[in-house]
Image 1 (cartoon, rainbow, N blue to C red):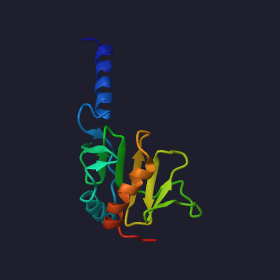
Image 2 (spheres, rainbow, N blue to C red):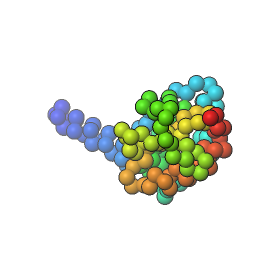
Image 3 (cartoon, one colour):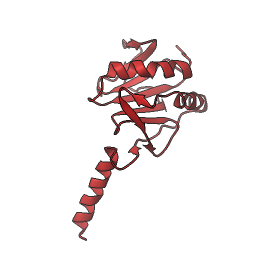
Image 4 (cartoon, one colour):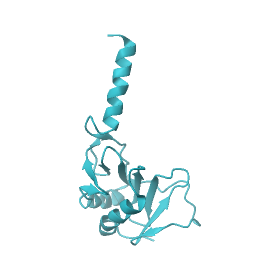
Length: 148
């Protein structure tokens, strides 16, 4: 087997894994501080099995701070740092009593703010952000107390 073939085969396997065809979806877990970690573990137990029609799947590596639906179409990371480009004067939309910072540089990225932990959600074009954020509002409100 040539080195070129091995590399192409490796890339193909990596792409299949990312697409959800080969198992778990790769997503780096955050390392939250202890109070946020406890809140995130509470959130993990409340997240839906189906989100906007996408089935929940495993993440790689497995983590209580990460949830994935579909073939990586929707990804959630709990306990992330405060969005670096969020200014105190930014207008933040509120969806069912949860404030979501919409990153202007990354339109598929939303971060729940003003809670015991920051929750980052990435939503692919296959899904309507409004639907996903409405469905996530219930578990976020239940597991993450409001802080501000």
